[in-house]
Length: 40
Image (cartoon, rainbow, N blue to C red; front, top):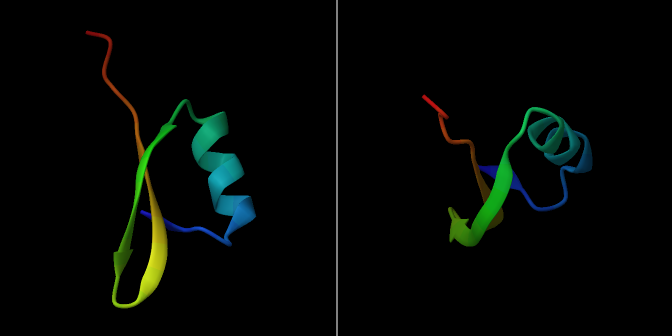
């Protein structure tokens, strides 16, 4: 989970092969959910 305004962390997640799966709010913070799947 990454805060939606945290652009450097979002860039790292994408560079590592993660994709945006959805958005949520937790503790009144807007968060984006990134995931990566194992190809094995």
